[in-house]
Structure formats: C-alpha cells, structure tokens
Length: 380
Image (cartoon, rainbow, N blue to C red; front, side):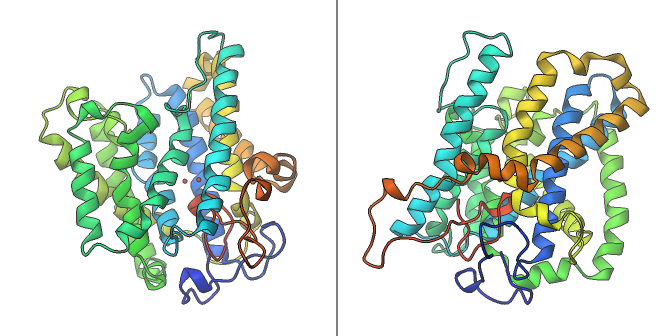
C-alpha cells in the first residue's frame, strides 16, 4: 500500500513482488498489521454477536468493537483508493477484484444456507447481499464514485449529508444493502482525503497514551447504552423510523457515530505495531479471512453450537474468542490463499480487450482487506 516513507502518492507507491505473498520488503508492515488486527476484530465481533442475549458484558465489548472496526477498514480502503479513476485498466480490476468474488461467494453463501441451513426456499439473489458480503457491493459503488469525491469542493460534508438523508429514508430498501453503502460513505470519503502524515500523527506516543482513557470511556458509555440504544444504529443498515426512533435522531446519530468511529479508529491505529511481526504476512490475506469465516460461523449456528450454555459463561466466552481468532488467522494463511486464489483473485484477462501496450498487468488490492499495490485492486 505504501512504502516505508509513506510520502508518495498512490500512483507511485511500489507494488509487492510476486503474487502478494506479503513477504516483500517493500510492503508497509503497519498497514498489514492493521488489516490483520481489524479482520480479527470482525470475526470476533461476529462470534460475539451469536451470544449477546442477556450477556451485558459481551454486548458492551461488541458495541465498542462495532463502533469502529468496519469504519477502520473503510477509511483505509478509501486511503488506498485515492488514485482510482475510470480508465479501462481500473474498471477491469474493479470487476475482477470485486464483482467476480461477489457473484461467486454470494451464490455459494445462498446455496450453503439452502442445503446446510435447511432453508430450501433460499433464493440465489445478487440484489440482496448476504450477511458480510454487503462490503463488496459498497466498495464497488464507492470506488466508482471516487472521481466525484476527488473533484467536488467539500466532499466530506457532502458525504455526511447523504448519510444523514439515508438514515431518515426507510424507502431506500435492501437492494445492494444501499443503506450501509450510503451511511458508511463518509468513512470512505474521509479515507480519500487522508495523507501519510495523518497516519504518522496517530502513531505518536502521546496519542497512544491518550487512547487508553478514551477506550475506557467508550466502554463505560457502551455499558450504559446496552438497555438504552438499539444495536441497529451500529449496523448502519436501516433508517431511524424503522427502529421506532423519531426521524430527527437519524442525522444526530449519523454525526455522533461518525465522530465516535473516527476517535476509536485513531485509538486503534495508535496501537497498531509498525514493525514486522509474526502476523504481518497475514495482512495480505485478510480478504480470504473476511469472505470465508462467515461460512464457518453460519455452519456453527445451523448446528446449534452457539446455543450451548457453557458459551454463556465467562470462560466459555473467552474460549469462543480464542477459537474465532485462531480460525480467522488460519484462513488468512498462504495455503488457504493458494487453494482459493482462483475465485478470490481470479485471472480474467481473457474476458477483456487488450490495449496497445499489451494489456493490464497485476491486480489492485481491495483497500483495507487486500495486499498493498500501486493502485489498489478492487475487504474491514
């Protein structure tokens, strides 16, 4: 994504060597570490979501994580989308990097639910993203609109207005999970506006120290909010009226949650290591963990494992957390990537016309979920 100096524009950032195995010395360890830690939070959050009933401590942790884990992914995705344009090369990479995996995994997810989840009437519909796959739809829309946000005079205020309007528009419906696309839009636009010095700033020692009491306060507020605030606000997938709230609360919560996401994302990034560690190499494979962990999570749900009473105990919750971390870590490893690369990172040169210089080369990363590339190929 960036070089070690973090001073070049995206179009001049060096690509990783080979097939993005994450071992290139030219990769920035900070962003690989951030991606891995963020995908761990995604998987752990999804696991916690299965045992929330009557467990206030778990729900408190869940709310803190959900306040920033996807915004962090999206902000980083926007940061590495700054050079995206509508050139044929970029459009080809957008299709192969987002559209093809979306079609493959949306179909597979529906079939998994139909046969393993004992729901034979489950349709295979590409209009209604399943569970976590909304992110690919959103990324497709956000990337297509990047030239617009790079052109208008005040992109972030405009994006916030659009998000606020979406939060009071229940008629938007569920097609392509457009509510999430619009309500998370300010995070992507913010990423487009960030510069390398912003990331250097949040990694200062003073910010790292200050982040500790900030997270403690966030946990206290989350504990207080459990009986008082609908979880739907953190999911950003519905309008205020649908949750039984007054319409004016939509814009208010949009601004409040954006502010919370920004602060907690800064706290998260402040504690991301900047040096190479054992999990740094896994940062290049986070898209695999993101796409695959949901199948295992749903299978466990279909089998009734989350209904087991021991999981409601503190020790059971800790065990579930450890298992979630181990599973998503395994899914980001090179053996898994090697087996599934043909559907997650497909080679589809045969489907596109070649230009005069022999066609496009390489593939862009999927922002926060992907390998670092000069032009991020188009999960967290």
